[in-house]
Length: 222
Image (cartoon, rainbow, N blue to C red):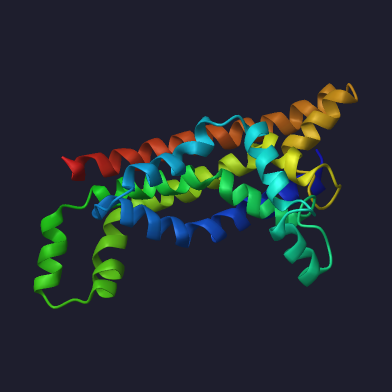
């Protein structure tokens, strides 16, 4: 087991969840309760990372984060290092790749709340912020928790975007999925098998939890 790679993967997973969850809650609620021009386009953009091959998404992110791009140049001027092939760039790329895994479950969670619940809360004199914190978030909590679990698990197993944007720097951007690739290239089947089993168990636990949480949302929608 490559414990350093596991540590990088865990930090990347936690960081991605922390970075994405507030934005995902805002956007998921917006898509659930509001109608506005261009909504279909926004939903299509949210879904895009699901259908793009990871190498294609990784290529465009690498170009965006590279030293010749405005973002890459600005980051290097402030921080003093390249955004591409750094943990910061890897974290940002992971957040972009995981947008649908955060927004879609949260959107479904907020959609499960009947409109009359929001109306009743407004009639009771609650402000929009109070309605959001006291009424909507507790009711949409299964969707929010599902989003966090899916994002964390998907980040642990992501390979294409990680390798394209982060490279393979030990202790900084080498994640568990990249370490498996390295071990297979070195014909170290045993180490690769142990790490692959770790990701397999994580995936199974994730599916079990998300299925259980989804069943809690569905009855409310009915």
